[in-house]
Length: 595
Image 1 (cartoon, rainbow, N blue to C red):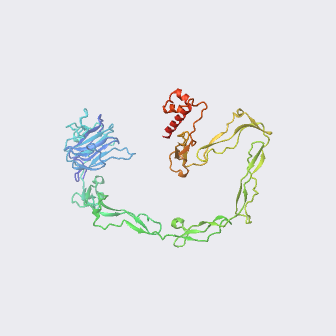
Image 2 (cartoon, helix red, strand yellow):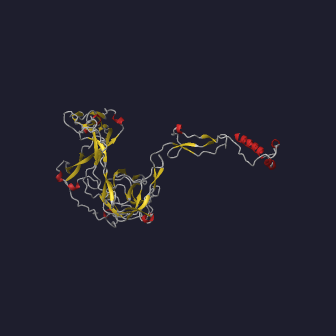
Image 3 (spheres, rainbow, N blue to C red):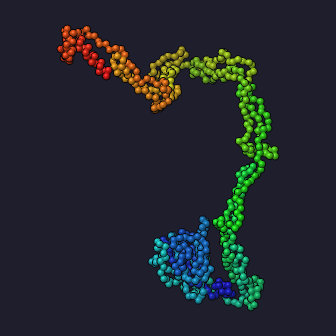
């Protein structure tokens, strides 16, 4: 077949229609750019450069074929207008190629190509082949009023348009205003008589026995006179039709169990487990899909778990006896060799044996009491005084002697000296703060304080001289008081002062409040009840004796009558009968207190 689809034809029964659409738009959305007539073949609509715009295809009957209703389709095969369109959209980062529609045709209705406009149009090239008997060129819309757009609901707004452009000379139309640089004008080949033609001679075998495969047309070179097959070299190789692809064996393949690899054994030695994945799958159109396991019920399901054993586990072995104790006396250590041995007797890393079962290879040993002797360090290099006489010290300890085997009975009383005199040279007159020792902490437990004496002294070769404190004012004065805390008291009893006695004589009582408080001064129940201080006690037990006033005497013999008549409230009788009135007043006061 020639380019026009005519068996044995010479490409004279059709014409190529092509053009380049360069118009840009002002509104984002769908814009119609070209019409593809009915009967078109070899359709190619390609964006010149990759952009954020998209091509869309819609049939005149109203059905969206590619990228309709504001939905961008994946690249692939799409049926429409009686043919199959291949939609390509290169997505490689480095690629600059634009997207395209390709179809062999022929179309059985008019198709409209749209641009989903989002940025300036880099140009769209289109071409297709029409039978020469159809005097129709490519249809482009009039863009003066942005009429052919799609509104926000995704509906195509189209209008009849009879504007024609870019007709080739063979179609009787006008020449295109501009052809792409790579567009070669179609030139009719000269007519000549051919003796041999390409003829379809069947199909190749299907590429798949099920689940959709493909087969292709086989062409043989034959004689035009008797249609006998001859050598392919006698036919024009440039006119050999391209093999047409045809789907075959569309019935689905039987489902099968897809078995994965076994996992590693769960244990490096001994009995372990291993797993594998088993999926029910089915093949269609060269793709293997996961399907429900019910489709594989006619097959026996493979096992997904299995026991495994890489090798027999190694074991611990004691390879030596205990060594002698590390010390001749006292506490020391001894050891022995413990190794992990394989089932064939080789030494292997400890990781291959069970670490929880490993026998101990080190243990303590007691060689009995050791003799004692004095141990001491070297003398310190630092003198206690920067100048003049001072002391230097060393450490002296009574320790068990692990070396000597002499039967010493102890360190004895002759303790080596732990200090000796040192002298760093004569002192010049130097003023320094000197401190005494800290006093005892003021509290046996809890927060307390302690003090020390701080004096300003001038040190010279003759000794020390006490100086006024201001002489040392340029030096940092040491602290003379600091807080101390020997230990936490824990819960402790606290109490208030005693209240006043309830009576001044003849045994009254007084009270105080007692509480158990913790170190942070919160109520506690941790105090010893046996040590709880008393909350109440007696007071003023002495008898009430009226104070005798030498000047308070009865001046009349009948003062008892005054008392009985209750005349002591008057100053005259209180003075005249002072002793009698005072005794009555004291008795009345005692009775009120007793209540």
